[in-house]
Image 1: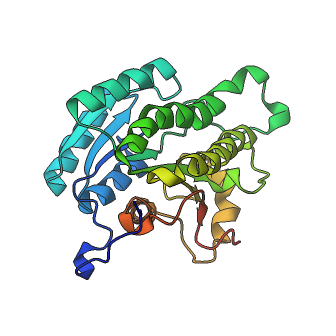
Image 2 (image 1 turned 60 degrees about the horizontal axis):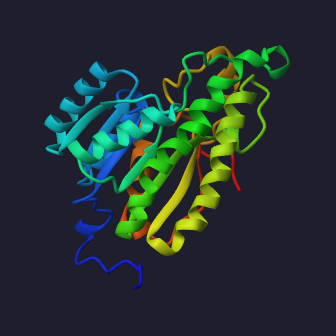
Image 3 (image 1 turned 90 degrees about the horizontal axis):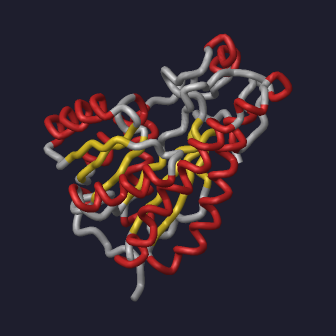
Length: 263
């Protein structure tokens, strides 16, 4: 059976996610909740997951009120395979099978701008655990079901740091992000004939990003479009990549950065 998208009957049908269920990790605040709002506005029901359950519940309730979407909140540490397996069982039972996974969790609690030569090996694990193992764990939890049902979208929120070298002290963060990008390319080819796409979004500097502005201030001034990215910039792209209209896009690393990196 062909996975080619059917022609929409009107422009209003474009990029509709009606009837789809999405899971957004790191979804209780910032970029996560903004992406969740874009998915809900496109018609998806959205489950939020993070390490902070109370905040996640509050965000899910606010999202439901604002959009009318079905929402749910779950607690998870994406770096723990056991915790993610429990999450998958809870989501499937209480919310339903996941069609769209947004791997958004990515900032370890210990995040700091420290050059590799000054970083003790004992501090390496959190960067790799959340940015690489977190993506592996969450993807593993949902991709089999997506393939069985013949439709799915895995979208990993990465960073320009995983694509190009930067001399700002984020080498371990970049290693995790770059590893996840490589994984997504291979996952895409394994699932391409099963109606499941896998793509990465490599973000540039974002508004209110948890990075020391003394480190990135000079970079901000050089962004060609003249501003930082916003959650809506990313959310709208997520809604497209998650849609049926994006069925021919898979295995890609999409740079979204105001022109800072071009390819």
